[in-house]
Image 1 (cartoon, helix red, strand yellow):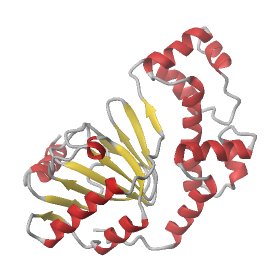
Image 2 (image 1 turned 135 degrees about the horizontal axis):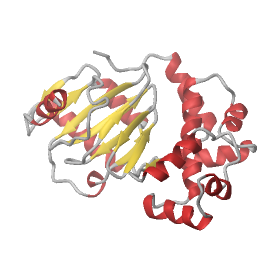
Image 3 (image 1 turned 120 degrees about the horizontal axis):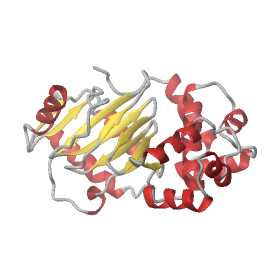
Length: 273
């Protein structure tokens, strides 16, 4: 709790400043919120942002925009993850800035971040750093990028969470609604209703998201080729795997792998503390 209070105080103690923080400050903290909006950029791995309603998956070279006073907590379990946080005072913006969303880091945004790679701490109106960061913020809504769409709804229903845990451990199998209902001692109708009422999604869509998330982790952490990864997460058809991956991530798995290889072989252009 003390660490959490220190973070919130650091973010909000200067209400008019733009605060840049480059360390992984928010890892595994309880749910919290700030009076400032937050731009959180992820490099080198996958971060997990939890909210009251959903778990958001943020792959490398993506950012998440978190509106002010939006309860959340960040989690990650990889050593090579690098995070940049930029906290913005209330600019009375609307539309894009009122909604939580995950987007790819564009070439222009990447170059602006590289230019400001040594910046850290509070910057105030009247300084050119403040104006630069304000321009960076305005850029976000102008790029009209497609949202990254893997968002796993969560529930406190213990029965459903036990079913989900079982599914996570059997992703390489042929998972069907009928078999899962039978193993859970439920009717197909009851299990279908449980997914719809508690998670607001279908069994098939939820399993699809679980499989693609696992595929992303295998691409990042293993040396398996794409065919092996497809089989590992339950696809016998590589084309179906590729199409579903693209549907949820806006890129082919081969593109995701190339991006990962580039990041492993090149220095991340941001100074670590």
